[in-house]
Length: 204
Ligand SMILES: Cc1cc2nc3c(=O)[nH]c(=O)nc-3n(C[C@H](O)[C@H](O)[C@H](O)COP(=O)(O)O)c2cc1C
Image (cartoon, rainbow, N blue to C red; front, side, top):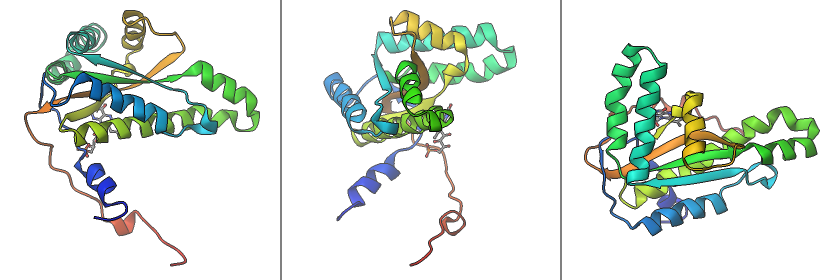
C-alpha cells in the first residue's frame, strides 16, 4: 500500500448503511475525537471555519428521531408519512447522530469582507459542509460503524426544534444529519457510471 491507497480504501468502504443497531464498537470519546478532528482539519472558504457539529448519543439521539417522526406526521401528507416512518424508525434504532451546521454569523461577516464574491458564499459554505460530512462518514466507517446521511432540515420546524432542544445559537443553520450505529446489514446494490464519461484529462 502506497500513497493514497489507504485513503481510497477508506473512501470506497463508506456506504449508506440503514440497518444499524443502538450499539457502538468504539467509545463515545473516540466518536467525539473524530468529529473534532474533522472540524479542525476540513477546509472552508477564506478559512472562515463556519462549520459546527453536534453529537447526539443514545437517548439524545432517540429524542432527535422522535421529533423527526412527529414533524413529518404533522406537516406532510399521510402517504409521505407512511413512507418515511419506517425509515425514521431505522434511524431511531441507531446509536447516535452527528448534526452538521453552518454558522450564518461567520458567513455574513466573510461575505461583507469579500463583497465581490458575496453571492457565492452560501454555495461554498455548503461545499465545505459536505466535505465535513464525508470526512466524519468515512472515519466512522473506518472504525466499524455504519451510517447514512439524512436531511430532515427540509422541515424548518425540525431545524427550529433542534436549536431549541439543544440550546444552540440561532445562527447555526442545520445542514445534515449523519445517523450511525453498528451495522446489522449491508449496503444496497450500487452501479457506477463509466468513468470515461465523467473524467476528462488533457495534456497527459
Ligand atoms: C448531498 C447528499 C445528500 C443525500 N441525502 C440523503 C438523504 O436525505 N437520505 C438518504 O437516505 N440518503 C441520502 N444521501 C445518500 C445517497 O443516496 C447515497 O450516498 C448514494 O445513493 C450512493 O450510495 P452510497 O452512499 O451507499 O455510496 C445523500 C448523499 C449525498 C451526497
